[in-house]
Length: 209
Length: 173
Image 1 (cartoon, rainbow over the protein chains, first blue to last red):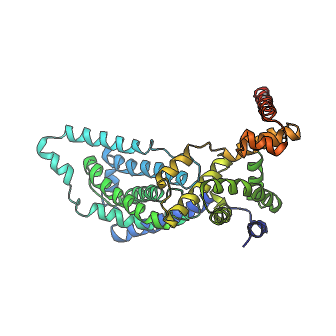
Image 2 (image 1 turned 120 degrees about the horizontal axis):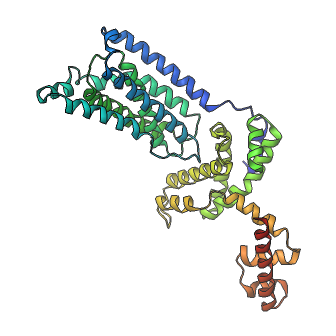
Image 3 (image 1 turned 90 degrees about the vertical axis):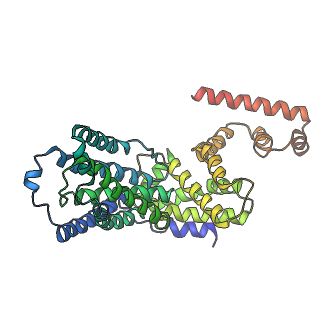
C-alpha cells in the first residue's frame, strides 16, 4: 500500500481516545479483587488481626508492600509512555525503610531469638503464597499496559511484576500472622522479587508492539 | 507548538487535525529512516509501520510531555525493532545504533522545520545555493558549475547567507 493511502485510512475516523491510565486502573482493580477474594478463600484474615494492629511490626508489614506498590505502579506507567523519563530513585525508598526496621528489630533482640525472627513459622510457604496471590494482579497490570507503548518491554514488565508482587504481598499481609519485621524484610522481598522476575520475562513477550 | 496542538485535537476525535498531523509527520519520518537505513524500500516500510504505531498507540501520549519526545521514542523503537528482526549486522551493533540515535537532539524533526523556516528568509537564489552546498553537500566547484557563478562568488554568497541566518537566529533569541 502507498503511504498516502495508508495515511488517509488511518485519518478517516479517529475515535476520541480514552485515557490509557483509566484502562490500566480498571484492569488492576479487577486483578486486585480476584487476589483479595483468593486470599479470603484460601487463607482468611489472620485470627489475631484485632490484636495485631496495636503492634508496630504489623504496620511495617502493611506499609512496606503498599509503599512499594504505589511507587512501582507509577514507574510502570511512566515506562509505558514513550519519551517519558523513567529513572530509578524512589523505588529504593521502601527497601531502605524495611531494612532499617529489620535492623532495629534484629539488633534489639537477644541473640537466641534472632533466628526465630528470621525464620518465623511460614518461611517455606510465604514467598510462594505471595507469588500465587500476585498472579491475577500481574495479568491485569500487563493487560492494562498493553494499551500503553513500553519502549523497553522487559524493564516495563519488571516494574509491572514488582508492582503486582508488592500489591499481592500487601493482600497476603491480611492473612499472614508472622509478627517480625525481619521476616517481612527477607521473605516478603523474596516473593515480590520473584514476581518482578516473572513480570520481566513475560513482559518481554507480551509488551512488545 | 504546532504538532502538539494537532495531536491534542486528534486525540479528542478531530479527523482534520489528525490528517494534518500525520501528513506533516510523514516527511520527517521519511528523512529519519532514510538517513539510517540503506534500502529505500525498508525506510518506506518503516514510515508506514511507524504511522500505524502512532495510530494504535496514540493513547500512550501523555499531554504533559513534549510531543516530539514521544514521536522520537516511537520512531527509535520501530527502528531498533526492525534492525533486530532483519538480523542484518550493520556497520554499527544495535546497542551503538541506539546510542547514536539517543544522543541526537530529541527535537530533530522540529529543528528540520526551523531550518526550512529560516531558509525561507533568504532570497531565492541564495537559498538554493545554501541548500546545495550546506544541506545537499555539493562541493563549491559543483555548485559553481550548476549555477554558472564563479567558485569564489559561490563561496562569498554562501558565507554572506550564513552570516545573515546567524544574525536572524541571534535576534530571535
